[in-house]
Length: 326
Image (cartoon, rainbow, N blue to C red; front, side, top):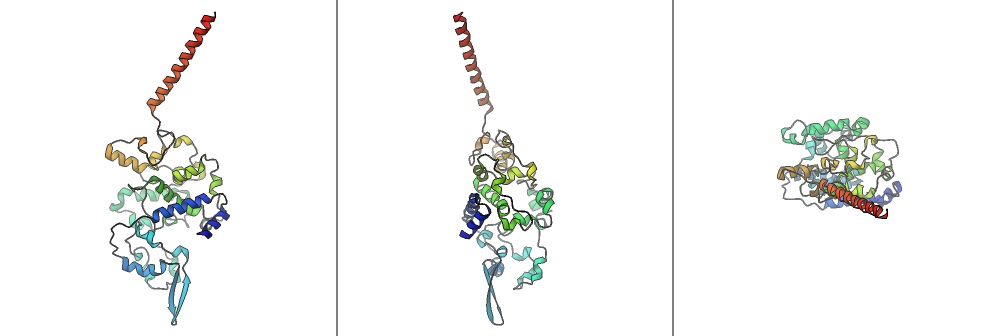
């Protein structure tokens, strides 16, 4: 942990708080408890996790035991996997059964693995999630158009740890923000990972957002995708990430009664409220206070009326003072 923090400070000497946000996010989700689940594939997966659930692995060769360091990219966080969306999958549901032979043939790493759409596309069970629309949005995103050969769903959503947040009824918005932002920052605040798809220097996230007022508050209260994606009406979370040229910089987009956040960050709460009560009011957003989103048009009229009456009273007073003087 100390090494990770010091390494981050070398990259971003003024951005330690971003690292702290990532750490807080990881810690908060690590506390999630596994509800009553029956792990039907535990025995099969333990054969894989015996090695991939640890930072070292060993095997025998010519009656000798050898210990090797497991590359970090191949280490599975078993606690996070247990509460992920794919918690009850067999490893070989996505990976070829040739991996059952250990140590693995090195040529296997060049084989393609199952993609999200292999399971989620064209299936009536998942139709309500509009995966086809998500795929179409992703194909038009800057991530896909610029890095199509190196960028896929797995680049952001690790199949071993990813869990649904946007549709979680019991989760606080702040935790959803931290979790989703950690996905973006895992690359945009990590020099090593960023270099896997770009030859340029990783831009300093803080310096790039130095125009943003109350920068830390924005990073903690809204997701990166709120400003960097095109709003989607058909998907819960927009996936068309756009270039910085099209990033939202107009404060009124969010800080108004018709806040864009109602169609993005608070979209699930809005839809649930409409289903249960038939309407939605911005004052129901108790998790986060959004300046400008709570304005009431009648209070606006009332304040304008009071202001006008004050001006009228001052005008009448001045008029009679002048009249009496002459």
